Amino acid sequence: MKQLLFGLAILFLLFGCEGSGISPSVDRSDSLIVIDAGHGGHDTGATACGQYEKNLVLQIAERTANKFKEVGYKVYLTRADDRFIKLSGRTKIADKLDAKVFISIHANAIANKSRFQVVEGIETYYLQKTRDGRSQRIAKRENDAVLQGADNLSKDVIIDSVLSGPKLIESNKLAIDVQNSIMQKVRTLYPNTKNGGARPAPFYVLVGASRPSILVEVGYITNDKERAKLFTDAYQKKIVEGIAAGATRYIDNRKKELGF
Image (cartoon, rainbow, N blue to C red; front, side, top):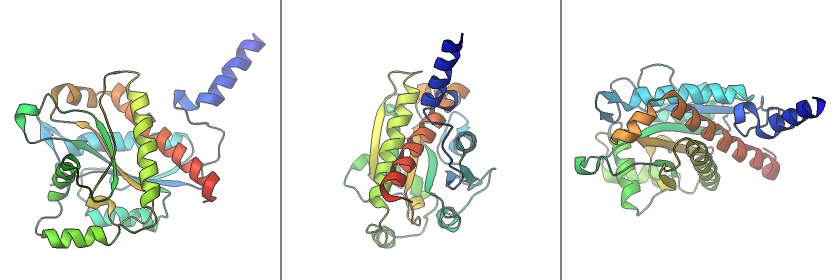
């Protein structure tokens, strides 16, 4: 019996809280995470079959915040209810609170109805210009609702002003860690979940952040199969576990390398 209990204790230390892969023995009280639920208020985000992106991502953001708290982080939600916050205000919160990372949560969509049941998958983005048409289209959809009236030159100036920032490489690494962890978790439930990868795109919600920042597209709300999964507790739990495990891996590695 003693050997059994010892073995269980070792497994708990190795795999952390509820199999999340995060060790519960590490002190993370000095690290604050800002979680941003995309859209809100008058900005519903993507819609499909009566479901709104703003509601889905708030559910996932709240679960993500709770998961980070469980493993010892301090957490701040940019919104905890159905309200709209300007993009500049979201990243300013992260800077003001000196967050370790900024994570914005969104759900994806496409306009071409003939491809609703074809296009699916999870993607994680970091701020960068790109020639990739898919990334540009996704960023444009997310940006349009909050950048009405800004011409293309103005948008380019905004992006160019931060492309040389010191946190771009770190954001790329954070995106890779989070994307890989999400895929590992969700594929325990749905092995065929499509991996859209960690990708660059000009998301304006990431522009103002002076710290590692990513935007997670948790799936396509326009895809019937994926939408059904996204609104279940079990699937949301796996997404949340992946975000928390990936961000923790990134933060722990940076602490070792940089001492921050």
